[in-house]
Structures are given as structure tokens and as C-alpha cells.
Amino acid sequence: MANAWKIARKNNAQLPLLIVIALAVVLVLLGKAQIGLFDRARAHATDLMAPMLEKVRAPVAGFDRWIGSIGEIFSVYEQNLKLKEENARLKQWRNVAITLQGRVNRYQELLHAVPDPQMNRVLARVIGRASRPFLQTMILDAGRGNKVLPGQAVMDARGMIGRIYLTGQRTSWVILLTDLNSRIPVTVAPRNVQAMMTGDNSGSPVLNLMSHTVTVHAGDQITTSGDGGLLPAGLPVGTVTSDGAGGWRVALLADAAASQDVEILNFSKPPEALPASAQLPAEAAGLKPQAPPPPAAAVAAAPVVPAAPAKPKPAAPAAPVADEEELDH
Image (cartoon, rainbow, N blue to C red):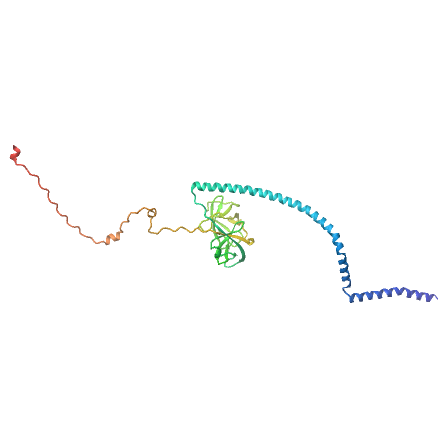
């Protein structure tokens, strides 16, 4: 009897384990048969709950935007104050520039000074960069059709970039100031020191002073000198920096690698034609010069003509002499 009860108890304990194993096998088979069943159910549940999630999320998102706008309000307020201060300084400098320009114009009228030539500006866009025929070259979308000529200066908003060296009908090529083949005359302010700026394929061209007796300092401003009449005078170029070996270099104001829109200055002052070699300054002034003496060779080659004998002059008639008797009487 006891043995029979133990056998029945053992069978009842193993029955639930068999049921669990069977259910697990069924679930595994169902999962393999329909691998996307749970994913579709989860997606369907998410679709049903989406409107409710949006309604719950709207106040939270609004609160987040309001919190973030508080920081932006303070940032915008600070930026607005800085812009107002900068605008006030720019207005002050603008008034100073207008006053100085009026004074310069008045001085030019009093001194009858020759006014600066007018320059035409052509706006162009950088459409490419190349390393030939020079190592550092820029290609613009303006050419002879826009009256662009070789030698003209190329500027961006900060300073001079280079010069036009080749023009097509619709494009032009620029040699940069940093190129090894670039050489332009410059002036170092405020001492008006004349120098030559030479590129060496580095970011800072070399500054060669014309005179060894003058001195420059780091931070001096460099502008074009206008020597040669090809480039206008006064174009901003850069500042003087030391090369660490006793020489000087130029930190350019413009960054050719970042330039997109540039201006081409149509400036050219052809040199005045010299007078003819036979025209003397006195003749050019309206005075007739004296005839030059004949050359010595022409005098020696001329034949010697004997002088004609002088004709004897007739003797003057003698005065009549009175008789002695008449004198005695």
C-alpha cells in the first residue's frame, strides 16, 4: 500500500514538469514559425498608444523649450549689447572718416593737387584653385569681357590677395602674393619706408627694405606704394612680423584659401610718352633754340677759297693852295 502511494506521488510531481516542457516546445515552434509575430504586436500597440504619447509629451516639450529659451534670452541680450556698442564705435569712426575726407578735399583744392584717379571695381567669384603654371593660383569667373586686364589688383573684404596675370574671355588667373614669383612694391607706415614684398610659397612673404639705414617694427602697417603705376597706392596688405633671424616678414590680412568673392581693381596709369630725342626742353617750352655750330669735320672738309685782292680806293682831291703873293697881300 505504501509502495503504491509513493508511485502515485512520483507520477503527480512529474506531470507538471512534462506540461511545462511541452508548452515551451510549442512556444519555440510558434516563435520559429512566426518570427515577426511579437514585433508586429509591439508595433500595433505603439500605434494605438501614439496619440496618447503625443498628448503627454507636448507639455513636457513645451516646458523644455521654455527652459531653453531663458538661456537664449540672456545670450541674445548680451549679443545685442555688444552689437550696439560696436555700432556706436563704427558710427564714431565713420564721422571721423567723413571729417578727414572733407579736410583732405579742402586741402587738395587749396593746393591745386592732382586728384587720385578713379578706379573701377569688378566683382568676381573664385571658381577654382590650381598649382600651375605657378604654385599658388586662383581662377576667377571674370575676364576680358568684364574689362579685366593683366596686372590688376585682386582684393577681398580684408586686403589684397594677388594680381591678375592671365585673362581669357570669361575667366582670369590670379598669382597670389605668397607665390614664389610674386613681387610688389610696398610702403611701411607710419615711417613711409619703401620696400619690396617677395613671396616664397609660405604663408608670410618676405619684406626686403630698400634702405638699410631705416628701421621698422613689428606691427607696422603695410600698404601698396603705387610705384610703377600698375597698382594703386594705399591698398591694405598686412602687418610687419619678425622671422626670428633678424629679418622681416608680412602677415597678410587676406586669407586666399578662404576667399570666395573678390574685387578686381581696374587701375592703370600708362607712363607719359617722352619727347623726341631731337626735341629740347626749350623747344618743348615754346622757345626757339640757337642753331648749333657746324661740326669740326665739316669745316675741315670745306674747300679753301683764296680771298679776292682788295681794290685801291681813289685818292681824295687835294685842296687848292694859294699863291705866296696873295698870302703876302
